[in-house]
Amino acid sequence: MANTNALGMIETKGLVGAIEAADAMVKAANVALVGKEQIGGGLVTVMVRGDVGAVKAATDAGAAAAERVGELISVHVIPRPHSEVDVILPHGHAQA
Image (cartoon, rainbow, N blue to C red; front, side, top):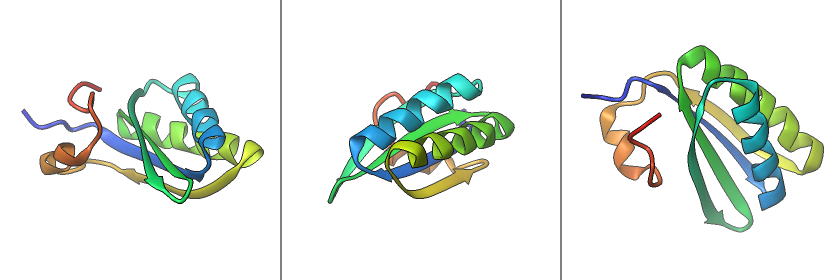
């Protein structure tokens, strides 16, 4: 069965902003933390899954938190990602 949960992503420059964003996201809404990816050059992306409204609220809160302590690079929500996208997500992606 395909995962119909939205996918929210926040990318920061530096780990501190990413951790702050992750903390704010899971506190702000009913979302599950999927994981983080360190891309290189100090860029870190944190991802959450949940229903669209919760993911949007979470990414808004996470972006604000990241900006307070570091550099926010990007915020994006995919409302219903195709099931093939799960293949490239970090471990733990199947349950959200």
